[in-house]
Amino acid sequence: MLKTRDVEILLAWDRIARHFRSVARHYRRSAGSFKDAAFRKVYGQIIKESIRSHLSQNLLVLKTDLWNEGIEVDRNMASFVSELVHNARVIGMDVSRAVCEFARDEGNCSIEIVRATLLASPFRQKFDFVIDISTVDHVPAHLRETWIAAVSSLLRKGGTLLISFDSRHNLFVELYHMLFTRRFYPEWPLAPSAVRLQLRRHGFHVIREHAVFLAGLFLGTHRPWFPLARFLRREKVFAFLKRIELSNRSPLLSFLAPQYAMIAVKIDGRA
Image (cartoon, rainbow, N blue to C red; front, side, top):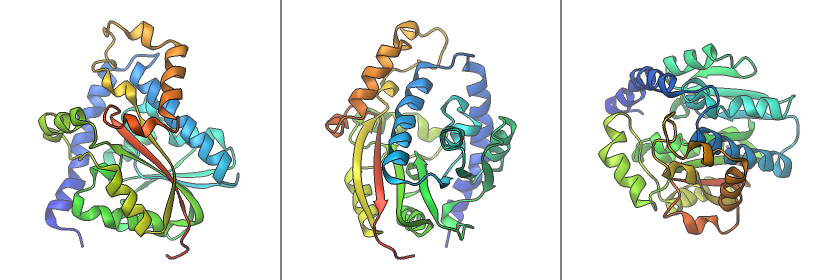
């Protein structure tokens, strides 16, 4: 049962989305920013490897929010999946009516858009792949167990979960949220150990972990005037960052990387 405060947080995303939509449009350039491109490269590679290694080609995919598809559109990963696997059925959900509308306006015709939240999931089908890119860290602490349980109930046995979140191991990220971002929207950096335990409790086996999005350390790279933009956008720079972030030792960089990603397989067949 959601409390009044929880409902207020969910409803606030309409206002938050409209504000950040105007900000994103103001700074967006036709070529996109370094941070957007780096985000797309590393998460795109994780998704590719997850699909090739653990999933069939007849995929039913759920993305747990549409912020990337409606607001920061150069980070659109739902359409990426539908383009990567042509016979995949991709459903994108978001609690915000505004975000859903913006995602439709951006021409995401290859995905199905549903206004909903996993805290009160409307889905009855079993998914092969759930993509939770920085959604769980917007969920208040007392509801995270409910969130993980909902993800587990929606995945078939053997299905794959990609879950990522802002890392509490990175002191800078924690301070940044405390001093800046929480004035605009609810988000709480999470400890990988806590998320790992929750996943195990709900029938998941974590098969890979990576500290990711090192590009997030470069403040201002979404702005056209950023002085290192030309250098950072070189393909060799992207390749170098991706190689570090997707290495087996990348979790050792969790004190430095803004985000942490886990790929987990559901091994328990319970609902």
